[in-house]
Image 1 (cartoon, rainbow, N blue to C red):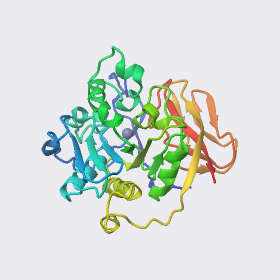
Image 2 (image 1 turned 45 degrees about the vertical axis):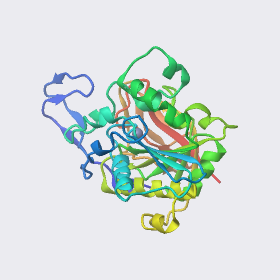
Image 3 (image 1 turned 45 degrees about the horizontal axis):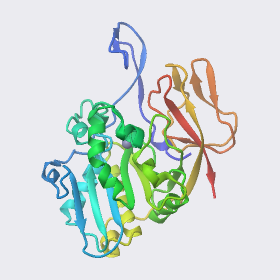
Image 4 (image 1 turned 135 degrees about the vertical axis):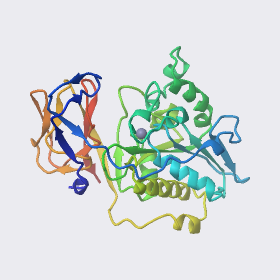
Length: 347
Ligand SMILES: [Zn+2]
């Protein structure tokens, strides 16, 4: 049962509580509230990287002067996921240069990031909409406007010119780090070449819109370009930024774009074996009263089919098969949102 050592604290309150999502106060209500996780990381000042050298704010390309792939590392697609920015700041400060090809470093949703507030750390995830659901030509070329779409349209040429992408993210719960590789064999192979995170999740993406790793031909079976997303750990833990930096080093090493001796300084040994999970289904909340029976954090392996995980209103949610893996259970799923995805470990 991976990850259960880090159960989150849930506490009951019986004072006036603000109903989540409604903004209304209902006196005397008993409500389960979540305590805020500690904010160990300090958001770095990314002002010095704004001008960059590409003509696009907060996008910098480091040239080796030698032939090789164009690798792109992305942080802050979600403005509150600061570990990726911490790792990228460290890459800049160490004066990293690729030994072949070119490396582009992208701070993506900088407008949301500037709103980061340790008192309300979830609030700066985005300004208008989730920036990881807009990466299809229909949306990018369409008439809709938002802060995220304006920025996505600026960044699109960077991804059009990329051969390989590492997109750095983090998670709400204390979930072990994992790599999302979509459905292509080449992204799964790249995730394995990284060697860590130990969990590799092959998934379909989201009905609500395409992620960066699903953009253009990155997600097509016969495409040439490869993109993976690493969920480095809990959003605001020091450890998560270490995983982000390590993932960047492992990614560049896999592209043979850095000296192994440099990578070695940032790569730790991890005892856990690689495990690949294929997502088989998503559980979508049908009511606003969706509760898990346990404080699942994700990557738990539930041994028996038919185990009750929780309830959606009166509907029990049960595991469909033995050794079912829970992937990133939602903190507070609302009707229509994905509550959890379920998967099987494959060889
Ligand atoms: Zn994210």
